[in-house]
Image (cartoon, rainbow, N blue to C red; front, side, top):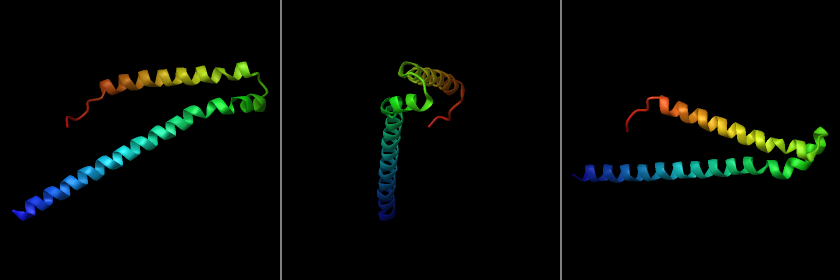
Length: 88
């Protein structure tokens, strides 16, 4: 009887550790995506100078990035709906 209780405690600890790893992973992904998204704004004037175009022209990068994100999200959503996922 003691063995079953011990294994339940070990299982609970493993589940808690697994949840903590997932939370840390999600947090890290959120930070990395935030850094990638925010990096274009401060770099924009230097980038325009580097490629010798006006700041107005180089600002189209924001539009291109947004359109790419929108297209990718729509495509991924449609793919996610079509793929049969196993029931948990």
